Length: 410
Image (cartoon, rainbow, N blue to C red; front, side, top):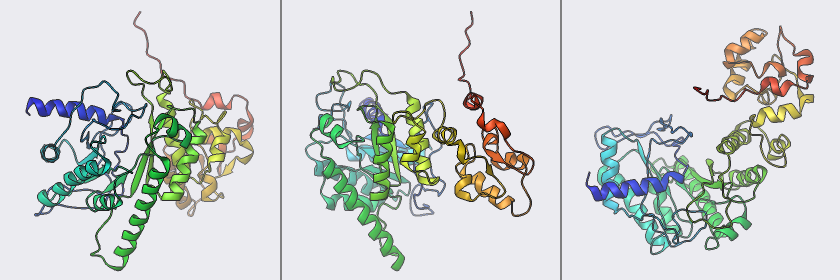
């Protein structure tokens, strides 16, 4: 690789590390067969993760880290004293194809700072996706980070080439966005999300009546918000997420823990939030989407709106609502079983199927769920009742795993 191109790749791949949206779930199945390059699978293409849990299987880069905006939390803001670089459209196309052919990646995640204006930048992003799809028959996954200020016609065109589109909501609260990114407007961001939601719904409806109708962002839209840059609590974050899921039918809301940046504003905290906070938010988000919990219920297990960093949100809720337990595994409905700590959705479905044939014992539940250590205090089975265990004051201490510690050599 040429040194100049290698430098751009180093700079712009590093600048893209703050984007957390790299899942490819829900992308339509595509195969290259004999007329194209690449493929996608229904099981998703993400298969490699960094130690902090971020997926790295996509070529995740910025078109450029030059930017007209001066958002105080962003390392790429115009006043930031960082090394700058910019790819051409052809350079990104070539990199994607070459990396794919070497089996380094299975798709492209492309974002950008704003150069010249929003429309010009959006046009450059679209040209990359269009060239890959039309000139090279690329069937791999493409995720484009769109720019809410761009023309709706451009976002409409982007949806024809990308599997997923996303618009960053930036911060959990409108007031925070006004204070930390005054050049961005919450109404503009949500307006773009609303138009995208309508277009995705229209495209799905059209394909039900006419299979040849073009796809539009078939993997839906997602967003990302920074956590820990403002004073928003976890409950505030989750309320915003609920608004986005219900109002715009987002496929995912990603949470990115704030990272202190050089020469940052006094408005920002000096230290990053615990990375565990990001993990707890993802767990709570999962409870909202698949386990029937409401934000208020999750917040009831928190302290002053902040999730417990030592235990997961479902266990925290269960410990504060012991009157709802124990649950009879042979009689409870699915919604009740989903609230038992330690039982995931797949385990609950196996339990419901298994109890049609026999009354389940604790060993049966252990085999079906993989582990019953946390659940046993909250369950009644054919051969087990928790008895006084559920009322013990030290129940939390019994269930919390001690943190691993690095041993010293001396």
